[in-house]
Image (cartoon, rainbow, N blue to C red; front, side, top):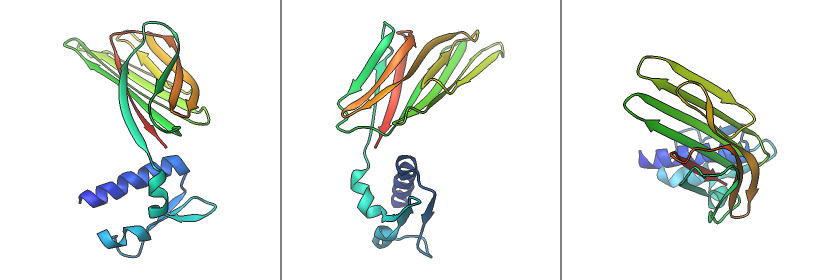
Length: 174
């Protein structure tokens, strides 16, 4: 079971990183000894997963939202990411806030944020021009950031609004 979950994770990352159109499996589900026979169809060529696996890198981390607006760089990844996911979550007695966002090496980005209070009111917003977008319990935007660049050792985003009480978690993939 662990091996199948590992295969699923690898295939999911490959789909994101290489823009795969479809996977081609052997006729029977792969066994441990057959994993090297799984192929990825990138649309222009077929490559064995075993050949691509060494190029896959994933790193996760977090940082506290900066106190000032402007560029913020995350470094020390050891690779130039092709895709980065962001997540913020907070729950308190009277309210909760959740935000998810992403950006890719081409500058595409998107984000969604929801917040709710214990009276039942809920706010939800999405953005296709930001990689981070957080709304509070009255629907006001209080954190947002946009794509700047993917760097050889990390990535850079630009904060247009900040709130230092939040931790931003990220996952970078190559």
